Length: 147
Image (cartoon, rainbow, N blue to C red; front, side):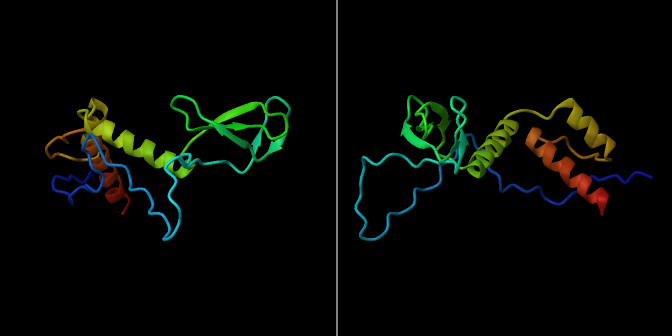
């Protein structure tokens, strides 16, 4: 027997669907520390990289960026370009991509596949307003089925 759900707990709305979000505030400088407005931007430097030119493995030398890139990683052994460096750690990049995906889903209506799956899960309420709401509703119904 399939359970029918029509009234569920409110969806988690902690993720804002607004088209623009303010970036996190910059960390405050330490008291008494000199302020250098010409300082290079924060760069996430990996502990070690492999040079495709000479095969050396080790910490890169950080070089200047170009265009949209904040900095470049250069081989410590031969000086060859290895890769562009990001100002964000891998965790921060993952969170930024997740947030961008969520915001993109907020701006599009639920897909026919999502609506069909909601129906298959027993949901008979009003259709969700967008893909993000449909996704959250599907997750909620799947979790309730597991209990």
